[in-house]
Image (cartoon, rainbow over all chains, first blue to last red; front, side, top):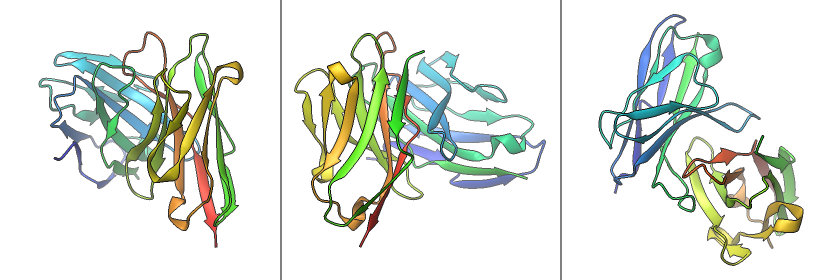
Length: 113
Length: 114
């Protein structure tokens, strides 16, 4: 009964490096999301996907890329990391149902130095 | 633009006192509404949700919230705070046309004093 699994839990990157944040869900949810959480700012949507092969930008997509080759996985790619990308990243999934709400992963805390 | 606003970034109560966390939404069509709780260094957990059935919704850990269309509000309450309630709370809305996608408020940190 894993739900949404995010890896790694913590990471320190140097400016200009790249990395992929992994997200996997085992609930057969169609919809998946990536958010970033910054103090006092709530959660901002980076990218989302409504199914395998379909992705779309959210509110703050610059500096990130995603892919959705399977229903289960939704990795987030950071290219050329910048200090402004220091944040906590959450992956979530849901059914295509307004009333369902999200199931969240436990988050990845990323620091760019 | 449609939005969710939480009034007060920090709320402090004494143990045993009433907890009231405020949430207002802006939408011409009543949305579905959610409250999530986030304990330190953890992800968000669903506390309760409103999906156009009963306007008074009961959730886990003794929390409840009332949907008031006339006030465009969905405030979260608990009659008696416990030390374990200390956490960050997020209000979120699923708006018309955005199937599944949620818009979050800024969050309210609840401090419970002994």
